[in-house]
Image (cartoon, rainbow, N blue to C red; front, side):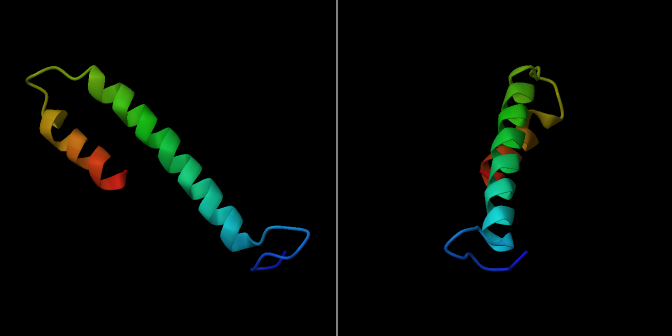
Length: 56
């Protein structure tokens, strides 16, 4: 495997960025679904949206 793109194949950098963003999107979706179920007195009620915003 090569580090950079060629005319016939993507390189490691492009693949790493692609899958990294895909994992971040799915992780943020899961975090958002989890946040919906938090109650008012949960300790994560303030911290979870801040985490979601900083990653997104």
